[in-house]
Length: 437
Image (tube, rainbow, N blue to C red; front, side):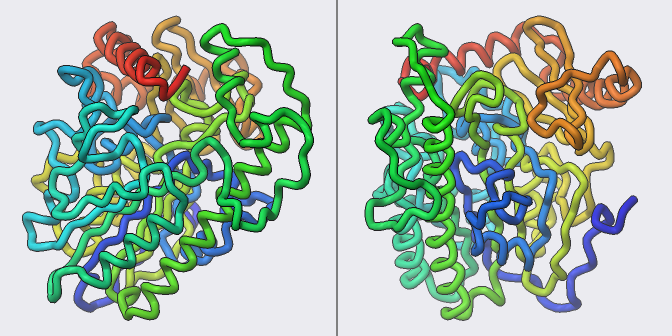
């Protein structure tokens, strides 16, 4: 095994950090970040954080939609556990123990600032029931759909007035760069130049495309320049978020919190830009939707780049482990990443009828509805355009085994009608709410 894939170094012989800051960036795909090799300098602040962290180059989200991906991140349980809740609930059910509740039970002050219309305590258009507040003493929803500086500002205000002499767990949910891709008008764009085409493209709104593809909407003629402008605006949204991240990290340093705070940054999913004939997210298990950034900065622990595939379902036990709380005995379905990459070396994801497994080089996508599998060589075909299953039956078999084992463990069967029904019902629910078309 290469050095970059080895077990992370042991922590320094000192007291573990006291605090945890979990930053979730909605709709942020890894391959549009400088730290992951993107040629544009979209993310200098994130790059600096990654350089001081356990930096996971091959992290995968377990779902390609905010619900249930965030549920999985906050509970350490796989997404299928959250589909098919009574009454169409999206929040975290009583059967799962959220990270905030675990921290609160151990004396931490717990708070969240969320701009998400899904991850909320109170109802919204896209989440009629809320349900994400358990364990949080303070849950700030005032930045709904607002820009990154709102979330950062509210977070810094809470840190200023947090309970004294208590460790804290703070969860921040940023909506940049979720569509519409439109950084604030005061932000000087770095990538999107003048554009005199379609109004909805100028506004960074891919909805007309999604409506055409999935809801029989009017035909849209999209030129190469149109698509590039959408991508440019998406990159500008990332750059804008990154500037706000820099402000947040600078303030942690100035307030003396950085030396005692674990900082984790992750995304719930990525975003498609017609790589597979679709836009936005919540539709497939492609790399564009499931390969996401993951960095965990732990004071007293050496930075390291880790190239083995990992699942973000492991983040909850990892954060507990990082502050000296043993995750053993808790209801997690993944082990702490501080003990090393998963034993099988495979990261799995699910969305709708699709299930996927990747070892970092090859990726197997299983369409449960059709009962067919496709294999992609990510080294030479990172956008998954050429199925090489026929040429590499040995690689299909090598990935199918852990994928099937995972399906049996989490869904009860390798082609469960119940799982498909739950996934279809979740998609129908999101469509009825207008979140997808």
